[in-house]
Length: 289
Ligand SMILES: NC(=O)c1ccc[n+]([C@@H]2O[C@H](COP(=O)([O-])OP(=O)(O)OC[C@H]3O[C@@H](n4cnc5c(N)ncnc54)[C@H](O)[C@@H]3O)[C@@H](O)[C@H]2O)c1
Image 1 (spheres, rainbow, N blue to C red):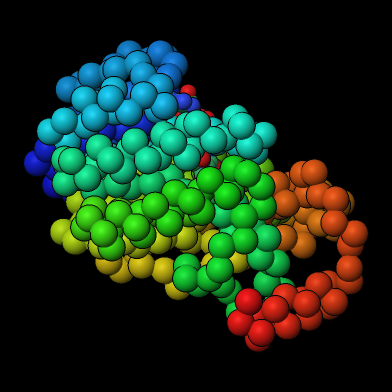
Image 2 (spheres, rainbow, N blue to C red):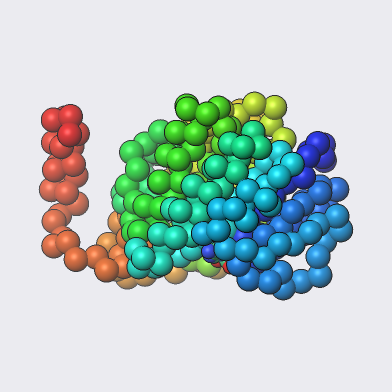
């Protein structure tokens, strides 16, 4: 079991699906948590935890909540594809408030980023190379774009202010994988909890990016900075293969891209053949654009 953080840890999005898992499990490990969300905490508060209801748009409230904290697990905000105006406040302005609070407290940020920040990368076929964490951002919607912004905010605050941050590019974090794509993207709750704990407890992180999926042989993803925090996933989606391998969308856009259904939402581009599409992107890359 990892050691206990010296200072309290602030958890945003505490009333959400992953927030509740983290609140329960980290408290059970003996951590002192400060929980916050725009909605009430729907369960009994875990031991040593306090809950403050607030909007991420309220920067003063965030500064107060973060007082004395050594790390901020930032899991709050819009967590699915939504119109730009809906995403903007919680995910862009709210993220700025989180980073300003971290800067003042000299706290580390652990950011719940998403695979949708890179969702327009094509899925690797057969032995094709997996993309590494330093790949280009290719967001598949406004939600994914806000996650790319969040990772870049981390880059800025590390370079300019020395605020450490660990960006978790979460795949599909659910009790069980539900469809074929999740053979690649699934992250078990237990692996998430170990990942969040390692990200907080690592002695030094700088700015780092981690593919947050379980030990899935079908993963789309390659190298990242996990060695820096000493995390290795222990679960695997393979255990569910028989049940989900046949669960495909039937939509060629959804099946082509890593972001799956998010890439297919509101997709209006006339479909070139995959080869033409790839050739255009390669030409743009070689021209240095
Ligand atoms: N669950 C996954 O598979 C997955 C995958 C990739 C990334 N993520 C990221 O992980 C985080 C948690 O995901 P989740 O599945 O628990 O989502 P969730 O929607 O259940 O939780 C998000 C929480 O943020 C809160 N929130 C929304 N707007 C807010 C605001 N303005 N002020 C304060 N709180 C606000 C919500 O009330 C909610 O409780 C999110 O940032 C999400 O983008 C999750």
